Length: 167
Image (tube, rainbow, N blue to C red; front, side, top):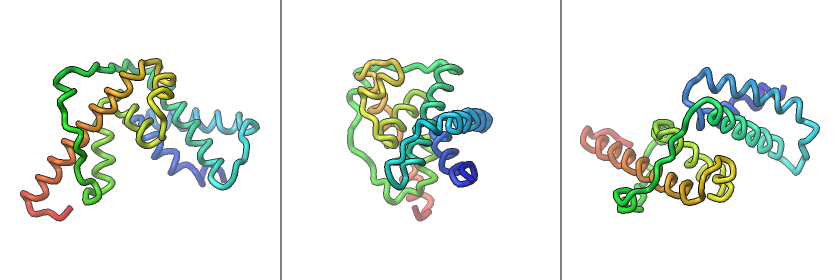
């Protein structure tokens, strides 16, 4: 019952961090083992608290998997990156699945920090603790991820205008 009720949302969360379908399956399996063996640690805090707790488990298991199985290079901010405009494109007219695809195309480090900051609502201090990096590294990775996404969105919008496709 718990599995069938939450598998879709937990798969979506895990897929924000991991690209390979087999990796997602592995992490979800580990997550459910942890959920079922740690259910005694869960404290009900109102509607949605079980899902929120399960999401935290999946995010933590995803990060653990990434740290264990891949080398993530966090690039430092250069003068070239510092000059990138902070102007965000209009995203309300871009389909959600397109934006989701752009996020999945980000390099691992950028994608992790973007998801932790934007989607999970973590701050740079929390992210630095989770990933063992400096707060400034987290901030620069987020800035770069946003710049890359903005450029991809602008290109998509321009392409749609050229071919007369409605966004």
